[in-house]
Image (cartoon, rainbow, N blue to C red; front, side, top):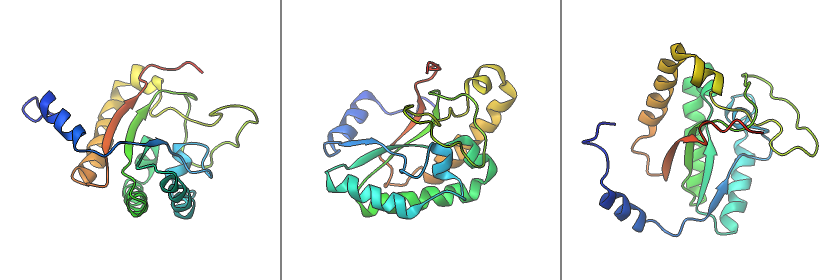
Length: 178
């Protein structure tokens, strides 16, 4: 974004003042061990999402922070964006406006598309995976163009979608402590 498009502090404050009191949580459906399992074609579960966002609405939530994953886009960009649209439609029915997160440096560094690991008993976030992973961010400049394409494609596809509350570009950059 060029500086000419950047909101002023006043405009950002006005936008925030126009929002309802925001009440929410991080959201990944109960059938998914991580954000990849949430978004991949084989494991995307709109029924679980609908049921659980219905529960969130019933206790007064009006937003959820939901993590995307670059590998879900890399393996099936069109399908991934269709699933985001389905998710947004479900959230909208429940009067929930999500915060969508592109990148995350928390928990397991190695991620791969396909079947995800089974949960480890008594281990918080045992299967959560970084996106794209510190190795890619810190040591693979050749990958940065692909990551830029991912952000531009997804954000560009939904840039004017009023169902989205806001975008979170990078959750906890550099946090590789388990």
